[in-house]
Every structure is written in C-alpha cells, then in structure tokens.
Length: 125
Image (tube, rainbow, N blue to C red):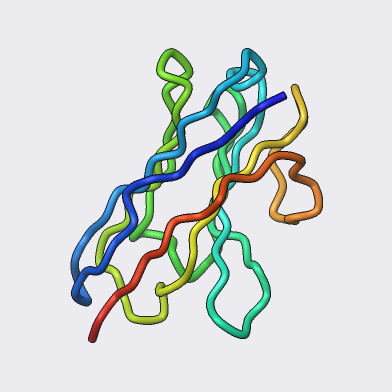
C-alpha cells in the first residue's frame, strides 16, 4: 500500500518555475515506478512524466520535454517534478501516481494503482 501527498503547486507567471513534490508513505515506494499526470478543466487526465523505481528510465510527454525534470529520492520517499519555462497551457491539477511494485513505467493512467489528491498549478499569461 502506498499513500501519496502532492505539494508545491501555486500561481506563477508565464516563464516562471515551480517544483512539485510527492511524498509517499509505505515501504513499497522504492520499488514502484512513479508518474505525474495532469488534468485541465474539461479535459481528460494526461501523462506528463514517469520515472522507474531505480530512476534509470524516464519518460516525458513531448510538450514538456526540455522544460520539466522528474526525479526521485528513495531515501526521502519523494518524487519531484521541476517545472521551468511554464506556459499558460500547463495550467491543470497535477497528480502523482504509483504503479505496483517492480512494474515498468507507463504513460497510461489506468496502469497506476495509487494516486494523490492533486495540486493546482496555474500559469498566468
């Protein structure tokens, strides 16, 4: 069992930066692939980034490549999403999610078993 709590969202101007954190409880974290997803009003939840349990495999959706960086600290049981050069179209609720132990990373929301409550990111133009 993994419980996830996101933080770090807020209001920022276009071009600014935010760092999201996702704190996990449960001993399975260090063996779980983690993902970040986002959902804007009226839109489906979409994949943003994912990282394997050991950090060796990472994936990003094309729209955030070069601007966002995912990382994890398995000692602190935390996964991060550093977001730079933010754009108004990045505005959404951001969720972190965990797969079951030892599963590979995935871009599909249905492959993730555990979800946080979400944190709002608003980018003004």
